[in-house]
Image (cartoon, rainbow over all chains, first blue to last red; front, side):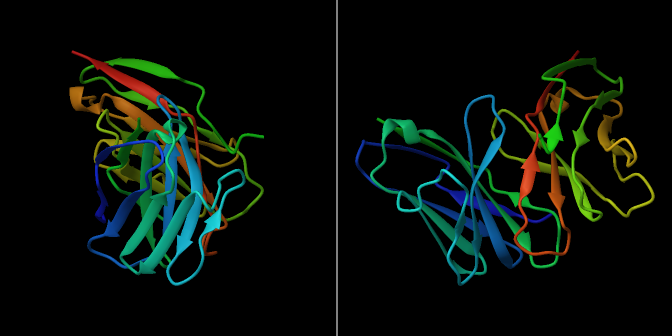
Length: 115
Length: 117
């Protein structure tokens, strides 16, 4: 299988600060990356789809100005949670998919706690 | 309507026994893919197995097999010879419109599997 990394794995920040999460595909080029959010004991909720070199496509109800996504290269996508608030505390997972392939490979996730 | 339905919030299985995790799906596409992922307590989503809608044979990967019944729109995961390390959440997922870029995955609500020693 393919390998996807995420950094940081855990972050605690103060309310009002911004947090950047990186997602990297380590052994393949990912034309598409996805960002998910998961609340405890719930399923994954897709936040946005990120294609290299173009603007991300956000799901309904996800604030694009709050969750900034940049997919600058074929191996890196970043999610920036701007002006974080306690309600943004969650588990954020990215996934990556090769062009033409069907399987999404997931990163290990980032636990965000906003105080 | 739910795209993916997992009706078993929690399951228990004795170590070394087999267990079936249910998954039904809803799509009008002719071309789609079905996936199973495992999520242990660490949080990482681990890909287990994939079944394409046009695949005639059920997918198998080691101790995992996918019981694909197209007419019933079901894609149950069978884990044989359960091990303690199999205790985790299991998510069924579907991607519609294969070979079209940008289509998202739909995830089920998950089944929590506990393997009893």
